Image (cartoon, rainbow, N blue to C red):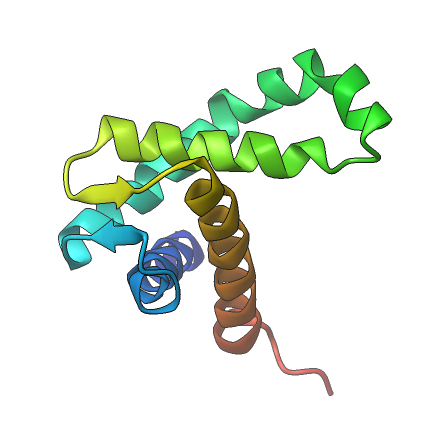
Length: 117
């Protein structure tokens, strides 16, 4: 349970870092970032697998690059659902979702990985 809460906080921190790296994404504050992290988690758990299955032929034809399009659409959907989180277009959504994934992965790796002996 603690690991899930820490992961949620890490994702919120990654969202707060995005406006500094990409000016076309706006996050109103920490509470908004926490809400967006929850909504993105739910979207990625419930909707994204269905979209991946439905777009499998296109994904195979593009050698997996279409997944970036799906991730961008999921980012835009979260912005559409929540006030205080603004993404200024599709390209910003694709780049933002990619940066969000990288930052979240790095922070999780740095803060939650167990030391190897």
